[in-house]
Length: 239
Ligand SMILES: Nc1ncnc2c1ncn2[C@@H]1O[C@H](COP(=O)(O)OP(=O)(O)OP(=O)(O)O)[C@@H](O)[C@H]1O
Image 1 (cartoon, rainbow, N blue to C red):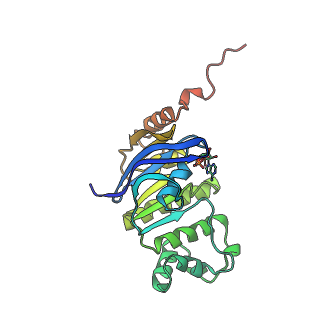
Image 2: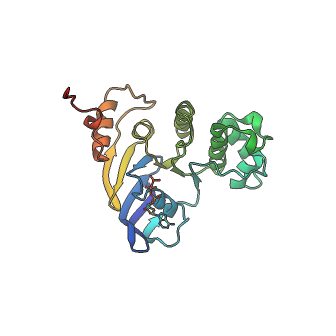
Image 3: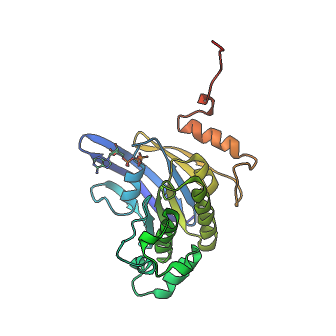
């Protein structure tokens, strides 16, 4: 196994509050790893550290230079056309940008302005900007979290296609258990500042929530997150 991302003993405190308390993490080449955990458990903090956006963190970590980050918000520059936003990742390589836009289904919108795009289209542009860098690893912070349910499903399917076409590795921060099980090879749970669980998702691609084994994995992952499925509804006492 060739590791593309490796972290050992990553720590980060904000004032007196320790958010990450010795995180160890390895992502193999081409592997998609989902990162889940309660709100405030430090998922975004860890992703920002790996992306090199938080110089105050301590510990050891290596992430290839050829990485790209996609956030929940598209973060497109409103004064640049779509194609010029994509080109931000690879200045001077126009054909890579055109190819990346075509791959996300937006070849005909190259000259549009970000304000003319829907939320889903803008997020596609953000993915095109990442893809144009030909990344060996994508760092994704809830990239589908702000989208409506149908658009999210389409984007998840797009991600699956891009992944098989490019073979990049990814760290996918998500709150969505099904999303983790649909897209990832492993699901990590961050709790108390550490990786508290590491669940392998041994399902073939393409996946669907009604695949055999999916329900059991969902149950296990929810258990690991401290939200057992049985807590929905509960026994009706009739009183
Ligand atoms: N710049 C900062 N200054 C102070 N505290 C911070 C800062 N960034 C994050 N935190 C704190 O660190 C903790 C972890 O935040 P983080 O955003 O990493 O959690 P998360 O798991 O991504 O949460 P969510 O799922 O709600 O997005 C929170 O308690 C947050 O308030």
